[in-house]
Image 1 (cartoon, helix red, strand yellow):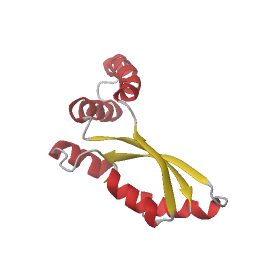
Image 2: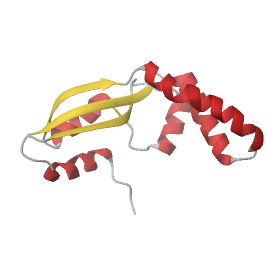
Image 3: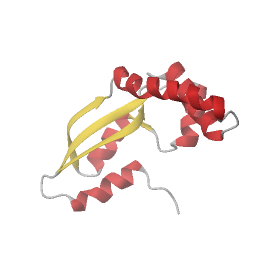
Length: 129
């Protein structure tokens, strides 16, 4: 079964909202027009529908919504997630050295540490037209 794109999912929510209903969601987006090859390779495998903010805004408008607010989550929010994860991963890696999950999480942490700023989570608060 094909995975629905974010643009399709935005349209699918619309009939479920009341008149002038609000939809709030976050999405992983490119924050640059020229992402590094490593970041692009990783995210094309993990999230092939990743777009830049302007493209998502166009898709939101095309789906019949008005953007009320949008913002990128802060670097502090990323640190609040990844710092405890790094500590826990270091503990777990000792007893699960051959775990693919450990490798995958470490790969993601490395990407975050090297390339955050090229990508981020964008919050969108939109209203049905």
